[in-house]
Length: 352
Ligand code: HPA
Ligand code: ZN
Figure 1 (cartoon, rainbow, N blue to C red):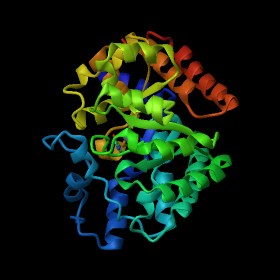
Figure 2: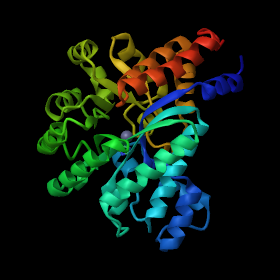
Figure 3: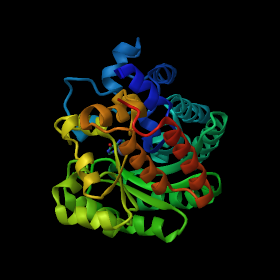
């Protein structure tokens, strides 16, 4: 089977994405339109001119710090801008075969320069995204991301309270992202206790993205993480791997993102296969598709081409993702059925 045929099979398979940022999913054409409307001081004459500022390009530095400079927060002028980017994120996910997307977004980022309220942006993302998911025949959940650099206990607490209010509309959890080198986990214990105390919101934490295995451990032990964003550094500590293998914490891995932020040297050296063999719960996700210029299908191609995975291994990862989704049991069963039907009807070996 040639590469194009393999790609089409992977694209058509129903996939689950547990780690995708709205702010990293904005189409470049949409950025151009929003940026021109706001008169931003960026090269907005063409997609080609803007691309190096908002996407990672070969030859650019490979570090988390450099990558995070690409998140400009001044694009948005109105709630309809926010609704638009949420809708488009679901349309793009559907086009790469995603059937369940947990989209994460930062109300602070969306409101920082726009004059919109954080609470209003939450409603806009969730209502518009849910409608778009429904239109595409997908299911959806939403995660509120807090950015380490922007810690503000009172503001974050009020976002948590509003997330609880919106839990019946689709908000399922909270996330901590940003620079974990400069802003380590211990600074966020009090606020994550608060999120955990709600008993409604689930918790996922970006940790071990090139830092250390200790950052993964402390996210689980001190910040109540049920899932870890990336968790690459867990592979450096066999005791931690053993512990993870015995527990329920899942690592949401994003191979191309991990390459572009320099936490793996080469895609073929990514620790996902080793972690999987050690019994750690891992799954494959997209992170920031517009910025990495990837789709979830591309990430599955990495598994096939770089690690020699076939459908059998991908099915195992997909089942872990479904099992780790922040959904009720009825929805989990529905998604699992959809995924299983597709893999079983393809015949598990057929990627050769
Ligand atoms: N790491 C930390 N923060 C982020 C990332 C990431 O990979 N993507 C978007 N915000
Ligand atoms: Zn991320």
